[in-house]
Length: 327
Image 1 (cartoon, helix red, strand yellow):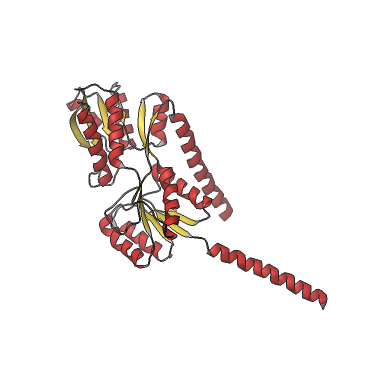
Image 2 (cartoon, one colour):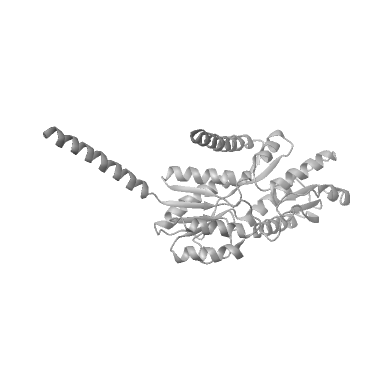
């Protein structure tokens, strides 16, 4: 009888430990990140930063994205699905504020803090915006391009969709600095189609303006396309982009371009989760948190490239391991 009592006590202790374990699991804060599109390297780097923060702060976290940013209702549908999960906080990149903000009002009604990351929008109830100061980014890029030129030199600007406030701010910053440096902007061209895919316009620019000495672009994919065209024409001129994806860093590291300007999507993802935790706890958070920009040259591109390759490689390996476990 005594032995049975001891066995029962052990079983009860084990059962209690299991219950406590599961209760602790349930106590984890739940943070969901709705990003732009994980088929783009920039946002995969952002995702890696967020996941590192999930792990560091023991968060029940998830990074998801709409299948496509078109049609514009996709992001709103994704946000409605996330709301049914009852997260403790939401981090979102509001690509289409006119349709997403009405959904975000539902989060507000349920007292779920909403933080914007990567893209800002005019909504008074957001907790904060974490991301790049795009005007500053444009200024830094303009200064970089201007440092490689002389007053009176001509440049072309190739930009993305100007319905995107980030594109507008980058252009403003770059044009202000180039103007002060006495650099002449001879043409501004749209380098994306309506779906955000790069379209080649550099060849026409070079034909119509054969004397240009530099090109400023509002993203790296456009810059890389411009570089390929310039190389085909046998033209060596400075071309500046504004993202810092691996292909651009490889181009700088190889010496094909002398420098580029980069954003910090990894830090952006990490900081977003860190601020979401503060928001859940009711702590004070500044209305804007700048994730910074950097100038990369051959001297430091290799280190950043190694970091990004390791970050993206780890993500792929983790996914492979996940699939292996499923099988």
